[in-house]
Length: 141
Image (cartoon, rainbow, N blue to C red; front, side, top):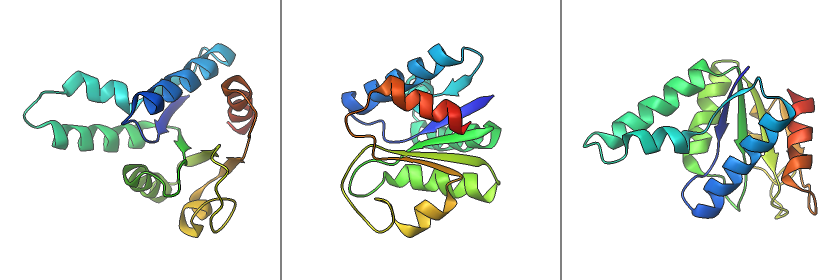
């Protein structure tokens, strides 16, 4: 199963969390093929056409994925993640949303449009661990 992990990846904390979640999922199911866009971007950083290559890479990886696993953190979800969600929804992909941020919003912490495209939603696991989060994701797969 090919999983595209969509979410913010701009800080060390975000990148570390993405990697930790990937590692925890692979520990539970080593046969998963999990794509982290941050790893793909590192392969082309410094290229003069970086922005176009990143966009095309993310677009192609969403298309190739069986499941989109999306991190829906913060008061407003990462805009690039929202584009990936829209593309995945249009392609009828299974989309699993994760939110560990306890700040409230319209529906279970999310904008209505975002919440309605999700196939499964893992919400508010305060006090949990990445390993327990990974177990919930495996159940949703």
